Length: 411
Image 1: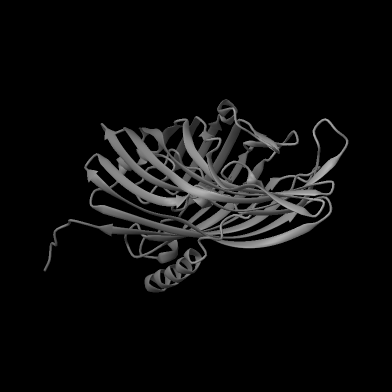
Image 2: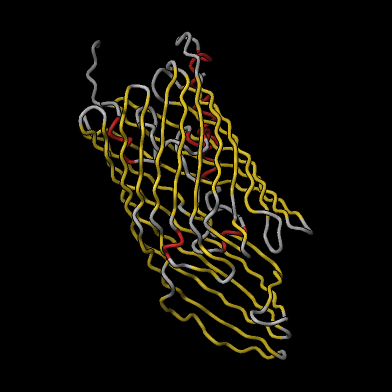
């Protein structure tokens, strides 16, 4: 059983990774640096991406760096993941379907001392892959309309360094330093009357961000956690070319002109989570996060950034009746997630809601496991120029555990 699971999971993950450049194709990714990417480790996708209060004892918890303070000694954890997403885009007059295969993350973690742990991970932060044709928009303060066609690619990557330390037996604190880097390519054309203006723009981004976290064990079954993501500025520079066509005469306004552009601002984000275990086989998690996008004073031509609230709930269960029986060690999980969105387009929030179910398939007698989850969700709505997304997502995370620096008792 173990060999088959490892063989098939490695094959599928290699296939998913080969499609790593085919990230999200959401039309909402034309805003800012693109749609923010949910890259969760272990079994977190199965429980609605909740888990701020979960320790990194049997898997790497990327939601809270303080979780590393509860790592077991001599255990080296490795996690790699991928996703397959089928999305249907719906407007008032048409419908379109697209499939994407995405690399999710690559991460490892290990204890540094008896009271601390360290992790390193690489994952996508955002995706700006979209294609929109002949979007009709009104001219401000007028009765006329113009048409926009846009196509984009790229996004930001996140390199995270996390450290967690345990103070006493119940309290842990942690810090994550994040390096964000990447670029987006944006091609847009504007049709106004008989004139067409085309803009080709490549924007490079780089910056750093810090996340503070804490977890506190009230007792052996109840833990609370919190996170603070510090506001930061992501520096941006662009290279742009602009061409205009009027009365069949083409003229170049700009040609590969380098200049600074508006930087991208990341908001203060505050999260709190609860984790409660019942009878050693049922565990419930509940998270709430608040992102203060409005304080960044950012706006877009077609919308605004607004404060975001996110709620997530999940549970895991395993019978553990007979540890020698494989299916008694299998974990079952489900979760719900809802957020109000951080974009407001045409006075409507781009909200997102989803539910998920999953399996945790153990490998050998260590903490190694294959985590499989299915999620269904809806994003946006059918209203005016808005688009509704219905998506089915399968996440596959392979979590491997290795025991280091343990002397053999028998030769």
